[in-house]
Length: 443
Image (cartoon, rainbow, N blue to C red; front, side, top):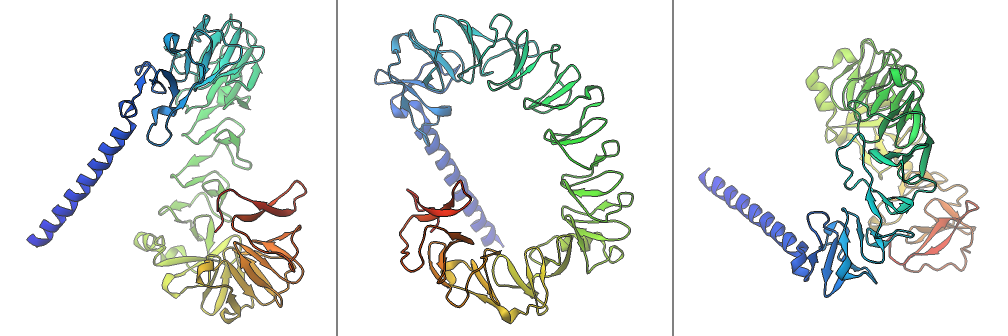
């Protein structure tokens, strides 16, 4: 026992030394002085530096992975940092290292906020008669009345702005929403999320958590209406489950046939009501809720012991994992029957499933009878008698060349030759045609 403790201590010590060494190396490599660079003003921004008499821009100050890029023409003697992203010299205003069109360096004004104490790093800046956001000019914005609000929102006397590409006619001074995550704001009777008006029921609007909100009519997920959910009865049961008066949900997927009054969450994957057991949002066909204890439910969640096999789009059976035969990532056999990822293949026996290619092909191609599948998708119209594998996800028969499960319209199977970095992609006509990539993405 003492020997094991001693060995464990040595291993832990070695890991700690390794982590410290990596941290020290990253700190050293990412230090501006390592690269003979000096920050212009590190208290305001870590992105602008002086090196060899030139101004260089380093995204997020990341010398280690990104490195620096010279700002051509920047004047070192007059260069000043304004905030994390904005800077100026005697000639230009810069945003993330690029000069801003129509920016006047002698006329720079921070955009203040009525809801925040500071506008630093808001992305908004006034220069002369122009208002900028993230370095882009906001067309038509009034600099005299322009102010920052919060979370990318700003306003002038006529409009509310969300960054530089969205504006909404202004009715009132917007206000923050209590407990709201980034992106929400209230404007008169409107609720905005990420610049979009999502609700006209501000009086009844409430934030449920970082994902969900609701008003008197709808439930929203990240600002999008969830059709069919009842707002008055909607509740979040766990990070994975929700319910309303009509049904239960796994995430936002309806659990078909569930009884919300008796619905109970057992763990992240298993739930039940008075009638059924459920695996995520699927009905478990071969087990009953009365047979299941909490410890049983926890075991069923263990994929190394139990596997869900789909009978159809709403039902599964849970079977012992060691009794399942994997033909590929999309086809399995259990109890002398064959299953695809989303359904049971009626009338098909395991001996009828043929894995095409060799082990180096990752079992991407499966033949069942006169059908061939690429990663579970049928190659429509393929001739199995003349079918052959070429390379790099290309196959062919005597009629067509195929890329994955798609016909390549500009390839002749009698003359086609595969080259490194060759692939196919969809064109404007929804046809797959040959392309050549600079990097080998598919082999």
